[in-house]
Amino acid sequence: MSGLPILTLLTVLPLVGAAIALWSGKHARAVALLTTLASLALALVVFANLPANGSIGLVERAVWAPSLGIEYHLGVDGLGALMLVLSAIVTLMSVDAAHRVHHQPGLYFGLVLLLESGLFGSFTALNFFHWFLFWELSLIPAFFLIKLWGGERRGPAATQFFVYTMAGSVALLVAFLAVFLSTGSMDFPHLTLLASTGELEPMITAHLGPVMLWLAIGVLAGFAVKVPMFPFHTWLPAAYAEAPSPVTMLLTGAMSKMGVYGLLRIAIPLFGPQIAQLRTPLLVLAVATVVMGAWAAAAQKDLKRVFAYSSVNHLGYCLLGIFALAIPVAVGDKAALASQAAALNGVILQMFNHGLTAATLFWFVAMLQTRTGGHRGIDNFGGLRKPAPVLAGLMGIALFSSLGLPGLNGFVGEFLIFRGVFSLAWVAATVSLLGLLVTAAVILTVIQKVFWGPVPEHCVGFPDLHHGERMALAPVIGLMLLIGLVPQLIVQSVNPTVTNLLAHWRF
Image (cartoon, rainbow, N blue to C red; front, side, top):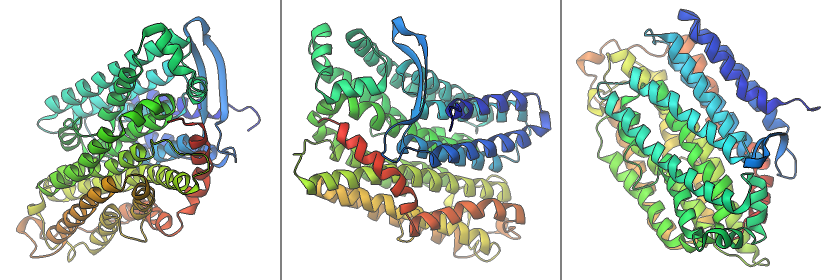
């Protein structure tokens, strides 16, 4: 890349677009579309220029406030770069879906682009201070997007979302202040090195006493809220249901991945032995997230709440894979190492696949609402395959992807997770299979009630997808099929990072 600060450019580009969109009035959406397209192109360039050995590349580093341990330090590996691509795709989808924003469109699309910048910054920053700024930056536009453009109960939903995530941020901040006071560093790679050599815990204990386990719990709580993990998930259904569907696409498709990313980038590398110590209760919570998320989805009548709880269920698989691999493994135990690698590859792939599929499902919900005057209850529809066969077909592909049908992208990540977890924690994996069965029942129920049966009166004359919608959805559905059939397109780029991460983690 000849020294080009591409990660800085990627982070700044949405900020520039936001400033332009803010003053563009009715042309704000066009500005946002151009900005998100350019961001996706840059994200793909980053993904194409990753180091072959899985290490962190495209590093940008500058002195900021060295006495406080603060540096401008950017870099990505396969994990971070894949999340950049996902964030760019989901933001582009969200902007495309928001074609009916007439109230203050400049402010709306400016906030969406500000949120995209926060996502990019979170997935590229390697210094806690720098990373925390972007972690919080993403929270602010999300709050206002729910508060100003949400449904009837948008106020309480936005407040609950803000309070929960802010509480998690406070836990993270307190834990990292303790780490900084003990080590004088906020640099993720340096702290990871200290942890991998066993030096981090003695340094913290010497300064603060035996608080390592409590620091790990604080960090886990901060990320558990963001994922979210049971029982920290209660903010999610209201936020997803009350937010405009294009904003819900961002919340589920990209922002929820920040929590899983934080577990992989910060929690596991720095607090591996403590997480291994808490492995059993964490696995119990992960299984509860999987199973109870699926059962809660089965009890809903609102399509947005169905898919909201389904998102909790699908992200539970990521938690299951992460906590299952947090176990000491002998160097020569090739079978256990292979299981760890399979689980971690599955988690990273599941992050991408769930983001893509969940965002697409909420996009279809937006289309259903637009065509029926706001209806989104499962019992409000029926027989839509007759008046809208193309919509039914494409939404059916997305639904089957969420179900985990072989041949679609949703299957691959879940398969790899269970491939690894069955060897590492077979009881947790076995119980979690109940979540797969209930999810299948939920998705099939949605398909039956929305697309089959008699067409209700208010759906007579229901329009099928127009040419522009088909063109917009074609690459997304095509990507689901491509990843499902040729998953090595992603796995080959991510696997070196998986190998590198596992080599430096200490449990």
